[in-house]
Image (cartoon, rainbow, N blue to C red; front, side, top):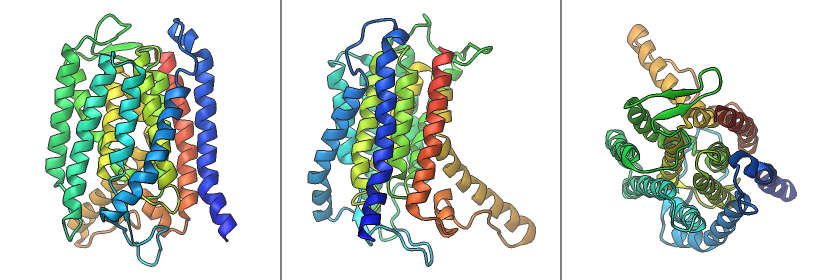
Length: 371
């Protein structure tokens, strides 16, 4: 039983690491053809592994520290279905993996990229919103943090400020102008004008909550986020190579965190991590116009969030019409429905990784042919 558990714990992550490494090495081999400029060796692989190693090492210090400080997250019970984690585990894992991913990206771009600086700033601000939410949750008997309205308001405010900064900032653009969204042929480039600012704000509000909805099983959100960051690192490469470094670094940070958050997790990322991830992904899309590839690579997270919306809407409608609410799913988000349906956590996470890998490859391909 112990041997089987070890295989489950390490096999999934080794498979994910192998996939990400091969994909990054492949892109490093052809990156100069895409950018049409000479690039340093291991342009994407180096920031990925630098962040991954640093976060892994930091976790061995920070996780016990969070545990001693009793920064614990209560585990959700689903009837008779038992969770793999112990009764409580440390949360706020974003406190150690988000700063490392951001700092490595800034350092490897030699503190000279305005796009990376903007993405890093908004990532930290979203992490701060998540930190406040987590802190209030810890001090509440009902595990309630910021209200949904206040959280959405803060996310919208940060996203709107970033959108206006983006309009005025002098960022890299091969198109000669801003507010353009690259799409595959025959659509090509679409100029959204001021609607671009609205789309940017919408993505910022959406992405953090999408990642947060996915963060419910050991390793689920971290692995999906790593795949999405790698996909975005590839699609922004022809537009802004510095942003590619940011994406690869954040992917490495997510993977390093995953080694502490894998099956039988010893820490969870909390809102501090999930909101920061969403903000970072939205910033990469906003700086490059690559909204469609991000939408595609986030397919699993979108499914999770959609299950919540469908459940609430169907329950409200049936209660209004028949006097008694009915549910589409046994519970939401969707990964908890699968658990109640009898699937084991590692199987659910593995399926999510496989689907996200295919979606990320599709997103990368669509992004590159769009440019």
